[in-house]
Amino acid sequence: MSEEKFFDCIFNKFPNKEVSYHDCIDIKNQFVPEKLYKYTRAKYAEELLIENLIYLPTIKELNDPYEARLFLNNERLKKEIYKNIDLNKFPKEMADEVIQDSSNKLSDEINTEISQDYSVICLSKDNCINPLWGNYADKYQGICLEYNLKDTEKTYLKDFCFPIKYVEREEDFEQIKSNESFAYNNIFFEPLLKKSFDWNYEKEWRVIIYKPDFQNMIEKKRKNCKIKEYLKFIEPTKVYLGLKIEESHENKILRICKDKGIDVCKMKIDNTNYNFKYEYKYKNNEQ
Image 1 (tube, one colour):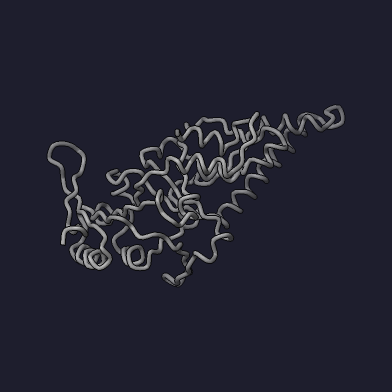
Image 2 (image 1 turned 90 degrees about the vertical axis):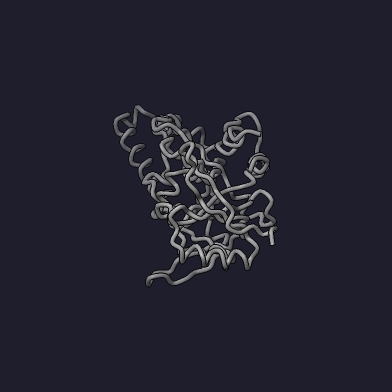
């Protein structure tokens, strides 16, 4: 089952077929990867490993300035509006200006709502991506955690875990098809599941959290005089230590993982190519 079929479903590209949101989720859940990875700093290990909490960033904290940005196709919007107005009474130039203003206002309103009510947990299909180790795992001093969301009993994680569709910068975004389909189309999926092709090396899957519906699974902690939000997550199946992790962090993580029975591997240089190798530091079934 291909990702494209899911994207066609969730972006409502089946005009002659009645499909529901749950139909799309059923399609997607057939190909959720068995292993997804979270790159992060070693100092967050206790929260991730002992408390099984994962940080919920605000949209503004994410590094892509276009993250969750709604784009509207103004030409399609014009066609819809022109169907319902008399251009003899309403000059085209004025109509264009009104449409542009309306489009900007709608886009700003939705972007604000997304920023306030949604958060995303960014994961990857690969545990050996150099830029992710460098950017998110503290220049190889951090860790990478392996999770199995495919088989988890916590359906709120599996059902809300989605692949990212990477698109070319010039792609035409087509939310506006008709008034009816615009209402049906959950327009929040477009900005939350599409990113520029520039980011495709991340091989991202993400858990999308609509925070008003997840209050009983969100914990709040005070960090540096600010209140931060964390989601109750699942226990990782394995922890990968970065090549340059500090010894104190490595020893602490090993102690925690041994207590919890979580396998630990450490990154090593591969002298034959640019890939990294991993060696076990602790394996639960080898006592």
